[in-house]
Image: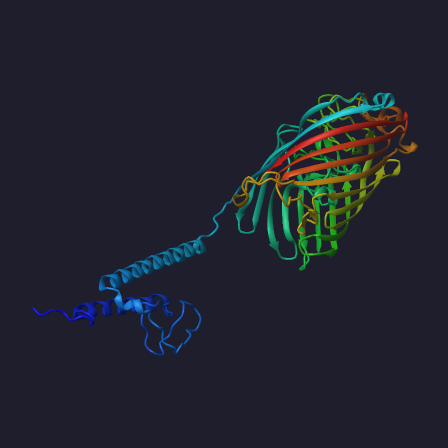
Length: 549
């Protein structure tokens, strides 16, 4: 055996060179077929002059005529090392192709998944209120001795969804007010009908007032304004059509409904969703709004609107109607009344005599029941928002066609809100109303990317001046309802004991710890001018904890 000479490189066996060439060719062919683009190269791959190089891309391949310089140390790599490197890259390519295939299959399944009907979503909210009262002696003698208390103002559960692509429904009950539980928004709605837009049938909010349509959970104060509480027929059973202009700057709605609420009461909620009576009892309401200014994102808005309601008053004229044990009155009547801007806790719809305070906040003004045929209610509204500041105002006027001629009442309010942390109220173009504030930063965040982070939440301060005039004219004397005789022959001293004017000033603060939870405080100072007993005052200090979902 001859000794090997120094300075000469050991030759690689021909079969090793052939195996390496075959694997390289197989790898490059697989890359080209699977990806359909040039293969990214390293110094381990020696290209031929003019070969296409570059990263895997969907774009046109880049032609680079410059050959890649191979590192000198590559000459010293063994066949085993070359094979190991190729196998690792081949395995990585297989894993990449498998991952891409799985993603494409998942995307295809998601696209193929279709909505199935009926659908449902559970929603609701609770409002726990606490109130402290301070009354001067004349106020106690006029309206009753209001008692401090704590209770649930509202506790609602609702199920809403679709039974078909354009057919919606909602079932909502309240467990804190009259009836326990009571009917609230329960309806079916068909969307995108020619000319009509959306048509709703059932019990729902009648289209009147931006204060009403903004929703209880979205209020900057604990309650709506005095004019709303006194004048507006709220939830009723009927049919309504609503629509928007193509640019969604204008909204309109009109509704036909049964007039009477509980015991044929013409105003307020009908929390039993029933109305009995052969006399009259049909009404019409409409509302239209327009955005004079609207910036994307709702930061700057100027909203104006008007509403009209005509209500034909109804009665149950069955034998014995209105007699003890048989609710209602035998003749159509009108009655407007209100508390200060804080709702009674657990207040039942059964009548509460004026001058008593057995169920929390008593009524401060009350026209009494008097015979009437119908009434016309007109409202004007405007809302302006510029970033964290917003201003809102409404005026309402009621003309009652009584048995002795026209009787007029009116009311108005102005309110301003400022968000100390910079948020603004979102606007709902489909309702011409406002939604609740969404804090920039939650008090404690539970979002996956912000878990445990603490912020200020959102802070809002608000002030409101509200007024309602429920003074009865002298000509109604002798035409008020007398429960003792079940006839409308009562005097103003008994039948209209609560007539007069009421003015509320309210200062409020709200802390939103997140978009679903808020704490509110209101200080309400009520100025009462009773037509019979004169001027008196009362203060209400009230709080609320609200959670919605």
